[in-house]
Image (cartoon, rainbow, N blue to C red; front, side, top):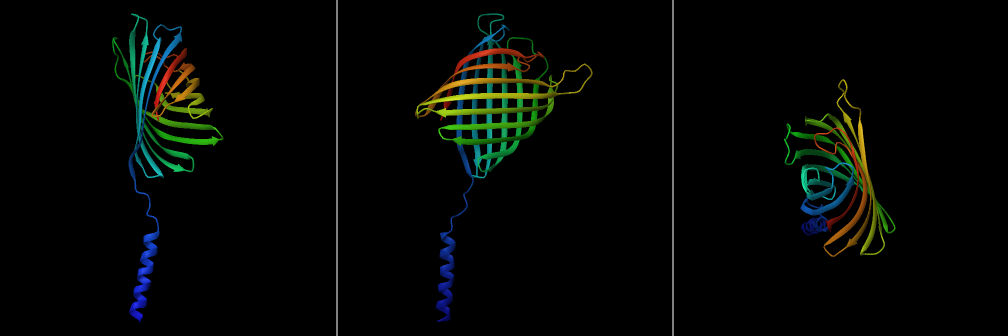
Length: 255
């Protein structure tokens, strides 16, 4: 009798343990996003007529609490300085992040490499820098609207041809859905860069971008038609001044 009672207790305990949900295992490659921008630039500087950008963003690992992501961004700027279509620079950016979710907020570590290259021009020594720092994301839903923001700060290292000591960025996006097919988006970006303190050196520099866009959603992708005004820091790789321009263009975005 005691043997049967002991066996019943063991089986009951095992059944309860089996009924408890197992913790979610890490999941690989949960998200992949792609976007392509093309824009006509209106600027006083003849080196800025057209702008195009390709970005690929991949979630490598997602445990529902932790996320590891990698992103690649390439930008090509076309002017009319030497010929009608004069591709004058190509800029590469590689980002890696490891973040922790806290509700609708993510806080994580950021690593970045930026490399800038002249095209069809004499190339000075490497124009590049690395950044290590912190980044936070937050999203808030308000009825049919969504407000999301990103903020980051990083320490610049291994600088080549730039005087950056640290970098910071803030990006806020407001989206409102009129229907499943049509959305309106407003975006504000800003950045401040601290520079190396040298005799005759320049103080901190800043720049920003304001954008309004109409988004048309499809089944697998969406297209955004946008109008933006930008004040870009060190817009040409070998220059040390800002360029202001208006951009009219489109953005193809995967869903």
